[in-house]
Structures are given as structure tokens and as C-alpha cells.
Length: 478
Image (tube, rainbow, N blue to C red; front, side):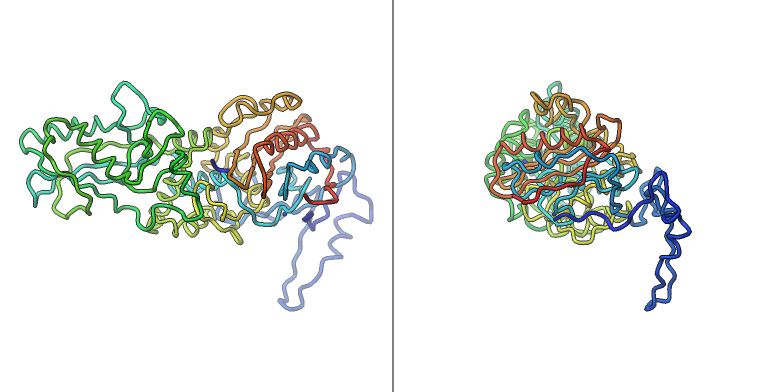
């Protein structure tokens, strides 16, 4: 699973054809002098663009300079295409929606866009951005096995946060195609064990600390198979069936990993005991495997909304930034990572990396500011753009945008989301008139699966309107 009141901007842009009264010189005469600060603030706006640098212009590298949120009020000339009827659909309970023209920074439509709200799996956009900013697309996780030289015959299986490590035999694939295999570890271990018989296997999962489950997420998400307990040592995301995306998870992922390794080793570990403890200090590395680059994780995570990869990416970001890899560290860690890319995270509340928790709080304005960076492939964010599901074609959008919405097929790249009380969609639109737009839609409350169709209808309306989208909003919020 996984899955704001009208607040248009405050800056009035100059049109393409300015009257004398609206000339830049007359506008400058109206600028106030800050009496308290003694600072003279001069802002010259032409055609909706500020001439002062904001750190988010054409620079292809993600910047740590705060990025201006979309605030420019659109001109009304030619904006006659309305989505009010679509936004008034009774299935869109407590609708939070915002549409931005990222080229001009104009807010074309806004309904509660500045009000923090749960995101469902749209949260994975933040997690992916944080991971790419801090770890980089080529980051790989190494899982190692050591011989404890103080205890002859003892090996230590040390987890470092790779949930894709698989017990599936060589020649077959888990849901994580191309993932490292326990059999590859076993081959290396057996080369060592021929001289030193294995008497015990110690499982070290101490790389992450704290609780293994976010209390805001129903435990049914584990038993139904949407997410495991989060431990640094696990195999196949702790799935009962490693070849199925949705598969029940256990109460002891670390123990399952140890049992699977012992089985992979075979006869040289038949009589070995298995315990869970922190590794000692006098160790000799005897085996290791490494994950695929996390760019592969991110693409898979976005396409199928994999909660497991999202939670592990969040913890790897936490560890990389010097935090402890716990649930409680995620808020500070992801915010710190996103701030590095020039995003203002003020007011955000981040409880997990997947969006399963309905206690997360993010604004549509923030999402659209991030989506602008994704659209422009700033820094490494092109990985996200390339990994997003495509309307009617791929991933979690493959079977959506059918029927009356089929004309939007192939023109919307977006992350889907749903939890018990939230349905969401946020992403990029190449509109019918060729305009690139970013959007965020979430309906929150007593919702059901029919909300997806209403969301798709609204997104298709955005596609059809393009830059002619009217800023009118429903008179009554559902």
C-alpha cells in the first residue's frame, strides 16, 4: 500500500504585453522600504520570473539553496478550462489538490495545497529523493560473513540493510531481479569451512536500532504481506514467498535469514547452532555479496510501490547522515537530505519512508516543488523521473486511465498511493497543449477504491486543460 483552502500566490506577474501603468519602473516605485530592518528589498518580476537568483534555475545540480515554493498567481487571460466539476466529485472526500506550471511557477489550481496532509505511498518520492541526494544512485549495500577468531568454528552473519538479499537459488529470481544470493555467500563460506568446521552461526542485525515496526501502521500490513519488520539482516524482504510482491511476513526476519544461510551452506553447517548477538571484535572476513545499485531499488520501488525498499532506503539515509537507522530518526534524516537539495522542509512530519503511516504530514506545495526538480532532472533526480509509473502503460498505473480517460494514456508520470483513509496521486503531466505541469492530488477520510477513478478523472482534466486551466475551485469542499 502506500499510499489544503484556496491559497493562490501573492505575486502578480506582468503579462506579455504590459501597459504603461504596469511597467517595471512604476512597479519599482511601489516597493516598500522595511522600516524595522532597514533593508531595501527590490524585486523585479517580468512575465512571472524573478530576476534575482533563487538557486533553482537552470543549474542541473541539486542545490542546498532553499527553493521558492510556487506562489505566482496565474493571469486570467485565456484560462477558461475548468476542472471544478471533476474536483467536486463526491468520491474526492477532503480533497487536497494543486497544479503548478513549473516553468512560470504559477499556481493554476489550489485546494488546501498548503495544508499538511498524509500522503500514502506518494511519500516514496521524498524517500527516493533523499536517498539519491545523500547516497547517490550507485550506492550498494554489502552483506558480510566473518569468522570469529576468538571462537574457532563460529561464523558471524552481519546485516547492513539489504532487504533484497535472496534465498532463491541461482538461476531463479525473487521479486528483486538481479539481487545478490545467499548461495554466493555459501560458496565463499564453504571454501573457508573445509579447514575449519562450522559449529555456530551468529546473526548480527544491530546496524539499525530501535523498534522494528512503526506503531501508526496496522499490523495487518505485515500479515497480509505489504511490509516486514525492519531489521538490518533479512532475506527477500522477509516474504514467505520470495517470488510474490505481496506475501505474508514473519515475526523473526533475522532468524529466517540465519536458517536460510545454514541451509545454503549445507552439510558443512549441519550441526551448527544459530544465535542472535552483536559481532565480536576479533573478526576475519570470509565472504561478502553486494546489492545492486540503489537506483535499481528506486525504480522498482516506484513502479510497484514496494514498501520494503522504501523503509530500508530511509534507514540507509539515516545511517549515512550519522543517525541510528531507527524509525525515530527518519524525520530528521530525510529532512536533512531534502534540505541539501534546496527544499524547505518546514512543517513536514515524516514518520516512515513508505507512506504506510497515516501520521505523515506533507503539503501539496512541497510535493510540487520537489516534482519541479524531478521534472528538470536536477542532480540525480532523473532516476525518479525515469522510474515513475506511466498512465495506462506501466507499473501501478498500467491498468488505470482507461475508458473516458484513455486520451491521457502515456502523458502522465506519477506515483500512486493508498492506505485505509488516503488515496493519492502526484507527478508530472505533459498536457494536451504541450505544457509541462506538476500536480498533487489526495483524498482523505472515509474513502474507498472508487476514489482512484475520480482521481484519474481529475488528472485527465488537468491533462486536457494544460496551461488554460482556470484557477476556479469548488464552492464547497467535500
